[in-house]
Image 1 (spheres, one colour):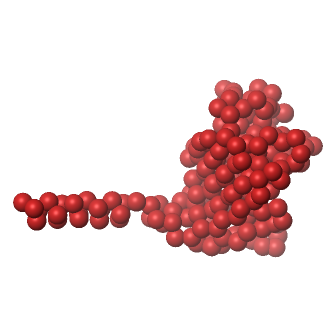
Image 2 (image 1 turned 135 degrees about the vertical axis):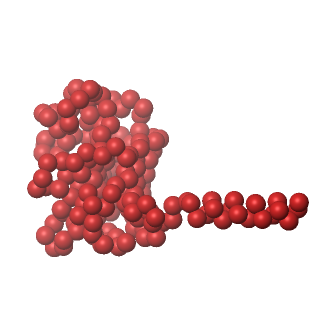
Image 3 (image 1 turned 90 degrees about the horizontal axis):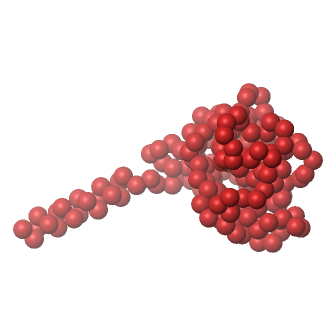
Length: 189
């Protein structure tokens, strides 16, 4: 009986290890707290951002840690957490992975149609219309996006930079923080 129990426990542990997602490649950047644009709330002050590939799921995992938890009901008309991706250097950024908070006060059609307020995730590839995804999470001071690599052209490597916004791009207000502060970080899978 004792031998059978040991075999069962060993099998269960082995199955748990094999079934968990394993990260093969990761690119991480730390950014000093307090370096966001003066007057910005701490929940747009990036302190760490990373891109990881989850082996076995073929999923890219984008994450951002902020200096303070994002309010459950942000007072902002708009919040955006972005990862710019340059998959074909030196041409510039090809894609933007976005997790954003939209409200009735968000300027001019910046968000998808639907009930507001809400969070939404999308990939902007600067050529085609945005493609929306639902695999994201905003939890405390962390923003996460889980993405099929095909949504950004399935590159094996790319350059990236994270940034946060309190106004949609193109509406006259610069991003609140960058990580890294000077572009860019390399990622390979």
